[in-house]
Structures are given as structure tokens and as C-alpha cells.
Length: 407
Image (cartoon, rainbow, N blue to C red; front, side):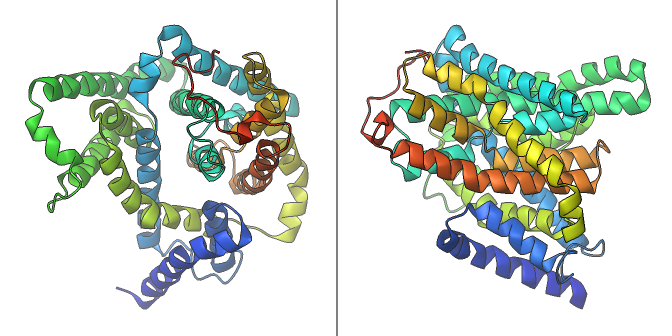
């Protein structure tokens, strides 16, 4: 191993170890601290990480990106969403569609590419879940409704990302490529559905081989091995389908989330591997490759401000939707703020936008800075609303009804 690569790995792993402690002291999301550390040691700072010669760090970051999408899918209760019934399951999806449509219209009014509007309108589970867990509201009616909306929105967002990815390729290759691209994109979708149904059927008739996958004390860690195998199989299917390969990791995670009913042990183990090392390396690498120069930040100030404002305005449908189901305006406002800060997935969309050549590093930098600011400010405002005297969310609430967003 070259000394330069060894130094880069040492610096990255030191940051991965230290950032959770620093983030807790600063009261910011860990991902924000990791990106900030990457900026300090990267091309905009000390130059220790982020150069093209550090292929090992880049590979670890890509693996972290894949694991992030895989574990994000694991956190979605697919069977629970399906059990709520078609109407209740479609309600949060329709809400997410309204959010994305609003974001796309705001982006178009600004003159930005549609991919930027998609980055503004995506939904994500992790940060909202963290705030609700911190406030001891995860099992409350509000908490369950927010998580259902975030989970359905994340599914819808990934689907749109895949379609936008196909559209980006068609734009480069021509109109004929669009039809071929759509047909090819159906391959991983069909494979995901077939794998989910097939494995669920096998689990029903032959449960014994699956028991070890969710065992807490399995010295062979078959569940972790099977998780990695499925993740890479999903990536391979995405390659066949002609979409962004790393999106295949998300589809594979959906299969596991649907098939393995008691998956909490497996989810905990895979999350430990992902968030213990690989995902933090991804966020450090994002920061390390950002060109954060004062002149560039000033030049991008208008775009950063627009993205922050658009993230709020595009969540007006969330506020209206939650308020119309009987929640108070304070709780509905908190829900909108929590869903307006999809920190991790927004950074992922920015990364994919650069990979597809939709926009350059300057726009990615503005998106990441806006995502970081929103990831700090909006959850903090939501916390204030959730503990305000007029908020019923601060008191214990009954479990959410099966109808999800519906009262």
C-alpha cells in the first residue's frame, strides 16, 4: 500500500471515530459533522483526502453509498404499508407526489434542471426518525404518521430517481433510447417483485433455512453474508436494467424488508456495519471532494437560499394534509419541517446528478450546503414545536390507526 493511501485511510478512519462525539457536543446530525470533517481534510482544506489518487477511499465511499441505500430500504416497513390497505397506502404516496410536483414547479420557475427539483422534493426516513426517537414520539400517532409518510415518500423518491436516471441516459442517447431504457429499467423492478414473492413463498413453506438469517447469536453471521450477497445481486440487476447501479442496492433492501418479517436483528447488524464505518466514509468523501471556497459560496448564495426556501414551500402539501386529518397546526408544522430535511437522500441525489452529468460540482456543492443547513435548522425548529405548550405531540399519544395518515 502506498504511503499516501495509508495516510488518507488513517485520516478518514480517525474522522469516522471522532465525529459522533463531536456531533453530539455540537448538537448537529452526525452526517453533517462527517461532511464538515471531509471539507477540512479534503480538497478545500488540508488536501489529505479527495484527490483522484485515493482510489481505495473512493471505493469504500461507493460501498458506503450502496450500504446506505440498502439499509434505508430495510428501515421501510413494506408489509406494514401494504397492510394498511390500498387507499391508506396511496395517501402518503400522493402526498409525496404533491411535494415533488411542487418542488419541480419551483425549480422550473427558477430555471433549474428538473434533477434539482427532484433533489429538493425527495423524502427520507433517518433524520425524521432520529428526532422523533429523541423526543420519545416514535410510537405516538404523530410519529407513526410521519414515519409512514417518510417511508412511502422515500420509496416514491427512489422510483423517481430511477426514472430520471433513465431519462438522463435517453437525453444523451436519443429518443429511441428512452423506450429501450424504460423497458430495461423494468428488469430490476420485475426482478425485485419476483424475488420478493418467491422468497416470501419459500419462507412460508420452508421456514427453517431462513431462521439463521435473523438469528442474534449466529457465529457464522449468515444474515450479514446473505444481505451483502443480495445487495450486490441487486446492483448487478440494476446494471442489466441500465439504471444507476447503486439504486439496485435499494431494491435489494426492499426484498429483505418484505421477506424477513422479524428482521430487527438483521437490520441492527447490517446497520452496525453500514453506519459504523462505510456510510461515514461516504459522507467524509462527499465533503472531501467539495470545493468550498468563499468566492464560490458567495456566488452560490442565491441558489443555496432558493433551495432552502423551496424545501419549505414544497412541504406545504404535507402541512395541509396532516392538518386536514385532525392534527393541530403545531404538530402539522413539525411534521412538515421534519419531512423538509431529507439530509442523507438529498446528498445522494446530488451525487447522482453529478454522475449523470446533469450539473457540475458547483451545483452539487450548493445542494450539499443547503442540505446541511436544513439538516440542522429544520429539525431544531421541529423540536421546538414538538415541546411547545400548545403541542399535543409532547404528551403520550395512542398508537397510530391502521389507516396511516387518515384519522
